[in-house]
Image: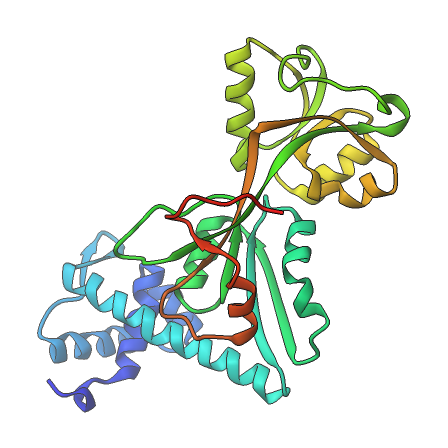
Length: 304
């Protein structure tokens, strides 16, 4: 079959149905009938010479051929979306850079990382936050240029990604200056029954902290578990409890003397990564930000 014999309109309909798993919703979204949608997908199957779907009750299951065609369709239409995003930015005389960050990542860290771009009048920034898996899906579909995360991504030959180590930071115990100025506590030895606000269970460093306390036989009194670092920053500032977090989260409060460092542990480290796709469109501004990063497969260096 030659390329000109492939109907990309039919392929687009298949792509939408394959992602949704059934016809009805897609037909409504595309303002067409379910029978017309089925007919176009059937024509694609006839052209390709193989079934793309197998019906299971009311849902559609992709066949092996359907899985293969979907993988190519994701790239084709993902690149189309990337092209439209690029053209939109260019039409405004700017370079669009789309950055995703996991919800548990410090917003202060993210701002520090993109700071060189904030003074560049030619850059149009799009910033998104969410769960890692959802952000990676958007990255693979070329709807994001880079994802900032505090955990690595497992190797997957079906979804090749570059995970670059950006740096790491020791975790600190901070508290209100009025009550804790000049006082020090050891982590975790001195934290038995101490009231703490902690990163939530989904945060990469929470497992490290819990394991450290378990091995030392220490049981802090947990008063709050917070996934969002911006909220954890507010709780650290206003609650009066001690808080375990990376110092970058409360850098302004530490500089202003509202909070003080009560303890620090080099056994607890938050690591920061930039995740990209190997076949991404190269953007000079992004490449310069990544230039100092190393591939995650190499031993990470000490961050500044």
